[in-house]
Length: 532
Image (cartoon, rainbow, N blue to C red; front, top):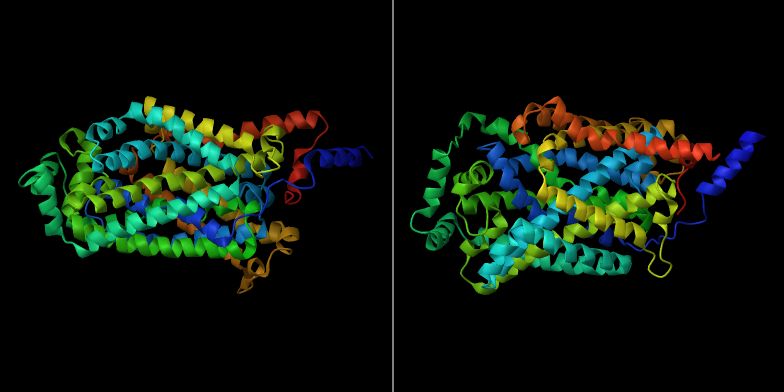
């Protein structure tokens, strides 16, 4: 009798008729979110900023090819899980229902922290590596030099985050319109950038580079890197190309992340797989072709030299706008209009990625609030805009705090093994996919037919989980056996990277026991899917 009474009270406390969120996103809107995080322009820029340094002589295009099958299975897992449990929170909902609630929260807390940290870094890059070149091509060289500094990023981060909060406070319709505009600007700028490289050649770039930097500056950059200690062993190129797939995985990452806001996607069972697979196909095509074009145009030795100097001897780099490929537009053409279009394309792409990142953070907090892991008022939704405004403001504050931590401390120096730990967390999600059809048969049997499809008698979702587990295990191996990815693996660095996963356990247990003392059983919230 007492147990039934507690169940009734707990159910009344945890469940309400509806979330207040509305399914407003079409499959194309959802694609824009996934493709915006995958972000081809930014991905190519970052891949060539680090991979040639860590793995000298590696073939980046080949690395993207090697990583593609693993990315496919990760995408398949996420699309099937999204269709089976289409609610805000993504892996928080999936893992908490498949394995155990506290494990689901720990996985999701780690991911949310990672997205907040990435958004903060992107705001820093927005100023230093993308806004600065835009000012430069408009002839405002002194402004460009100031914008590239850390203090400028701290100052400009405030209006950037306030603008994000404003856009999201106006509702998803406004968000999707802004994303479409940014997608179009990015598309024109990125395609033009690739076209200039495809129609040009290495000799043309050398002439442009030497014309601005001085006679023989191109060869001088390569020689400077050699004198600073850069070496390439041709015998290691195959192995290094394989290892470089860890960067390819990082660049692919994002296309699959629509499950975190699945509660707002129309016809989600169909839209999820459409959006995810189209984003992956488009991303893979541009990454592979783009990597080939970049190497052909800039030259492999030059790209390796720039990456080496930028990471190990930045005082010897002597480039006007830094080492990112997005800053090389001034060497690629003398046409001011082409320079402006390409620079605005890169600027739009770094703003575009911030929108889906903000969406992920706010919807994850919404899911926690709905299950009473954080105060319920955080999940309040504006009746007019259907937007969780309080969660949006909190997300903006957290991103800005992380920006300050990034620029004012050595915080990132302690997270050298974050890529490996992220893959470990991905293995937990893969394990959830493997057992979900058997452990939560009540939910699985109600899922769309595609989710329930079997191959050799085994559910497709389980197969996706098995291959994702293998893929993530491979990334873990590369991350922890190749210290130069971030630094030497030590107990301290490992615990620092694991901290945001470990700390989630007490953060979950504290409200759990508080609610239990009040006669409320949190575990009841995980017996079924959250409401729409």
